[in-house]
Length: 216
Ligand code: ADP
Ligand code: ADP
Ligand code: ZN
Picture 1 (cartoon, rainbow, N blue to C red):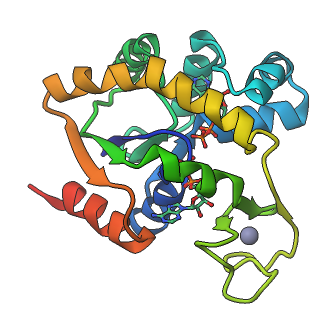
Picture 2 (spheres, rainbow, N blue to C red):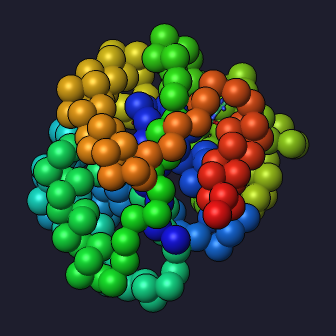
């Protein structure tokens, strides 16, 4: 199964993709995570992407589609994937169709997390992740079970993203509205779109997504 999780910054894409990965053995493909890894390693892609990401703007379609193509080449075609934060433009959506065909895959579901944008800023400025395994937490909404210790790997170092500040979030929201939202009707027209209320509890959102994946 190949699915896309769509929604603005802070909608819960990464949180839900992580759960599907743990519950169903699917693989999360987050272009944001891959780009951050490239920045950290100082690779040519990372050097190009850093300033764009810090500004909250979109990295070029060629770069992100290139890294998705490369990553899919390393996976068996029966390995299910969750696209998280990709595609984000009409051009990327077209490139993804070609990439999937090339790798013998097709899309099963596109799931839009519907959210109240005004509440997302709170989610984003309170977001932090485990420095070792990347598990996501939140200052108000998701604490580790033992304070200061990652539930998953036991690490005690956490980090925050440099672009998770209120000003950059506004730019990222505007980019979403201008460039990503317009691809939703394309998937609706193909009968692939399902909408889920992203404002509920994390568990309720997971249950709604699982119901879509399990429907026959
Ligand atoms: P995205 O990947 O769409 O940018 P995240 O999954 O990183 O979003 O979620 C943003 C922040 O909000 C994280 O700190 C996460 O723990 C928290 N969060 C995610 N889903 C919910 C939810 N349904 N209710 C409350 N907080 C949530
Ligand atoms: P969010 O939590 O906002 O959903 P991501 O981790 O998905 O954030 O992305 C962080 C940044 O990485 C984006 O603001 C953008 O600069 C870049 N990026 C990630 N995915 C893409 C993509 N598919 N196309 C262009 N830029 C991307
Ligand atoms: Zn951890």
